[in-house]
Amino acid sequence: MIRFLCAMKVMILHQHFKTPATGGAIRSYYLAKALVNRGVKAVVVTSSNEKKYTVADVEGIEVHYLPIAYDNSFGFFHRGKSFARFVLKSISAAKAMDGVSVCYAISTPLTTGLAAIYLKQRLRIPFIFEVGDLWPDAPIQLGVIKNYLLQKSLYALEKKIYHEAKSIVALSEPIKKSIEGKINGKQISVIPNFSDCDFYEKENKNPALQQKFSVGGKFIVSYIGATGMANGLDYFIECANASRKANLPVHFILAGDGATLGLLKSAAEKLKLTNITFTGLVDRNTVKEIMNITDAAFVCYKNIPILETGSPNKYFDALASGKLVITNFGGWIKDEIETNQCGFFVNPKQPQDFVNKISVYLADKEKLDQARQNARLLAEQKYHREKLGNQFAALFTA
Image (tube, rainbow, N blue to C red):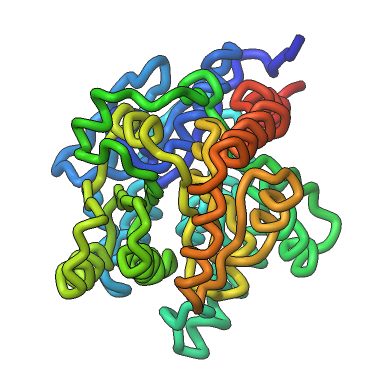
C-alpha cells in the first residue's frame, strides 16, 4: 500500500504534453495518471498552439495550456524562441498556483530545468528532473549546435540542473551512467517508457483494417513516430526500395510527422515506390489499428552513438502489441531484442541486410509468432504500465 504526503500536489512541467486523443508521445500523460489514480493531485503545465491560456480537466489531471507555438518542423531559431517562452510563461503560471509540494520537470528541452531551478530558489518548491534524451550531447552530435560558446553554456546549464535537482529520473541505464559521469552523489532512478499492456494486445489481424489500409495479404513493416532529422528515416525508404527490387510481399507504413516528412515523401515518389503508405500524424486509436495489421515494428535512428541511449515510445508500444522489432542502431535496445529473441538488428548502411533478414520471417511463420510472443512477454514482465507507474509514484511517497 503506497502512502503519500498529506495533501500532496505535484506539478509536472512538460512543454510537449500529449494525450491519447491528440496522438504523439504520451509518457507524461501516463505519469500524471499514475499519480491521479493513487490519490495525488497532478497539475501539468504545458504549451499549446492555441492563442489563449486555457485550463482543462483531462481525466482528473489539471492541465494548464500556455499559448506558445511549437511544431516539429521548426528550425533552430524558432525552437529556441519557443523553449525560452515556455520557461518564462511556465514560471508565471506556477507563481499563481497554491500548495504545490514538488515539481517534476521533464526534458527535452533542457531549458525546462531553468524554470524548475527558479521555482526551487524563489518559491522553495523542490524538483525532480527527468532526462529522456541527453542534452546537449544529442544536438551537438547531430550537428545542430555548432557554436563552441553555446555548447559550453548548455553543458554548464545541464550540470547546474543536475546539481539543483532533488533527484533525477533517467529513461535508460545508459542515460543514468552518462549522468553519473557528470555529477556525483545524486540519486538517479531508471524509469523507462511504459508498455500499455491493457490498451495494446497481441492479436490476429483484423480483415476490415487490412482493407481500410489497402494491405490485404501483405507483410507489414510499420514505423510510428516522429520524422525528424535524428530518426534517419531515409533508411526506411531505402529498405522499401530494396524490398521492391527483391519482389518481397512487404508493405511499409510510415505514421508520423516532422521536419523531414516532405523529403521522405519526395524520395518515395522519385523512386516510384508503391509499397509504402504515409499516414501523417495519427491519434492513439489509429496507432492501435496500424499495430493490429503490423507484423514488424521498425525503430529507426541515425547512426550516431548518443541516440543509442534513448528510450523511444515506439519500442514499448511494439512490445506491448507483440510485434517483431527491427532496429538499425546499436545500444541497449539492440542487445535486449537479441537476448529476448523478439527482433533483430539491420546494418544501417546496407538495406539489403533488411531484405535478407526479413526474408527468414516471411518464410517461417512459426519463427515470427515466437518472436511476437517473446516481445509481449518482455512487455508484461519488465515494462508493464502499472508496474512502472507504481515505481514512479513511489518517488513521492512519505
